[in-house]
Picture: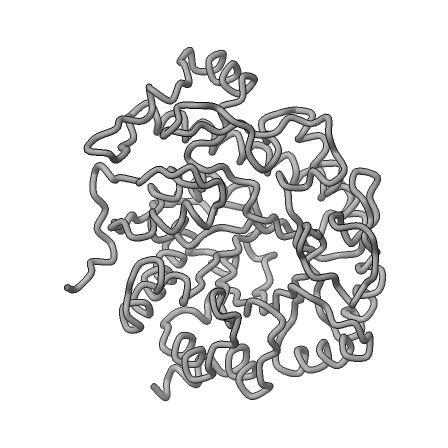
Length: 417
């Protein structure tokens, strides 16, 4: 049965589970139909400095090699292939592999100096000079609400289980707490003191549909809107499934706006340390392809975010999209094309502010995706050359010929198709 890619039901449903991971939530919701929602833009440009946004051609680095000579060799190769930016993970969660084969007793922390989190090792001090040698910009990829490393006096976010009708603390800090915001700003202020070119905010900044029921948040919502925030006002169970009420959408938009306000304050703070530094926000693909769903599920709203962030890192992971939406390969490519078209509509004056991230490793099998598949994804996409582009992740390292085609020959290859 042919799947309609952009058809969104007025009432959409979500099977609630007690799972706390984003992956578990996303597995259920991605099978829902979607609708194409176009964005209108004001007559004037959204930002006065649109032409200050360089087109990014990046490799997002999950794990740096232990041999510094290999790091130099990689950077040299990437520069030769047209890469101009490396995006480096600078946070470490329990279970992550350590950059550069570092040996330490710490199982969580960061890879830069800050008084607000444990230091695993100052990777940036080693990597930045090497990157500059090869004319590569450095973006530091940093977690936000999950940066509770060694912190025990900050407020966790409270979620609500619709099955058990209970509130419970879940992973991450309450982004609406002023103390939490101060903690995060301190970390990012220290990070901005390094001679980096940008910071990528991890997507843990955003809230799932059932999160954010802290007493302080509910009280703030009441004081600003005059309305109550209670689960029974937001969710209606119908035939064993949940639908959202009008009150839910107001609650959700309010939270999305508050998160955008925080991003704006964070951006101003880091630019006070480094005026040329660019802030990039990590977004799921629904932020473009299904805006209403993105608002419901993770509080993503590009209509407000586009005014507070410099770049948008769009997780356009084709294998993930294919699996979650149960598409075939041709449908997946059409879906990606529609995403590209939407990016060009949303930011017509500076589409390069969208970093279109290409998945080069299968998340389930952990195997490198075949060259022919990656080449087909990129070279068949019309208009992608107007966006910024990143391959995600390193490792694995792609062959030089393929990297050069992705970053240098996208237009040429497209014409050959």
